[in-house]
Image (cartoon, rainbow, N blue to C red; front, side):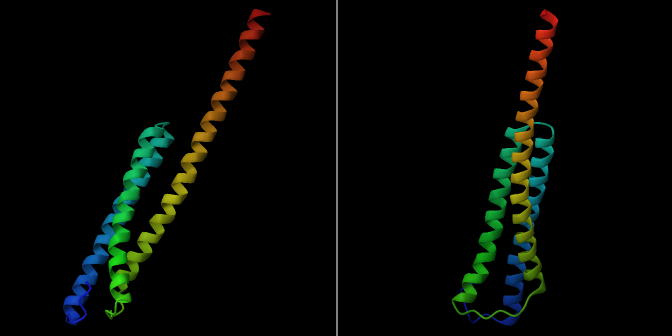
Length: 133
């Protein structure tokens, strides 16, 4: 996209293609994030982490596409406003936020799970003491 002499229609198609790639990768990331949250809800923390790693890679790819247009514009290419590209940027940023929230939610689940295990262990120990008394 660094070429500055391309015609308007070709440029519009290129930006649309970049936008679609951004939306595609961001959408794939969202699906993986949801799978991670489903997994953590069932106590499958390792699987959830793997899903988040894949989601992070999808978001990285979306960001690479976004950056290509931004760097091209910084290098002098003039772009017409594109609602599709704006939508793609919004989608990527929204899913970045979802990723951050998912990480926090997963950490909370893990913390709650650890606390529950401690409480269950203490309850079991108290029950064992009362049975032996």
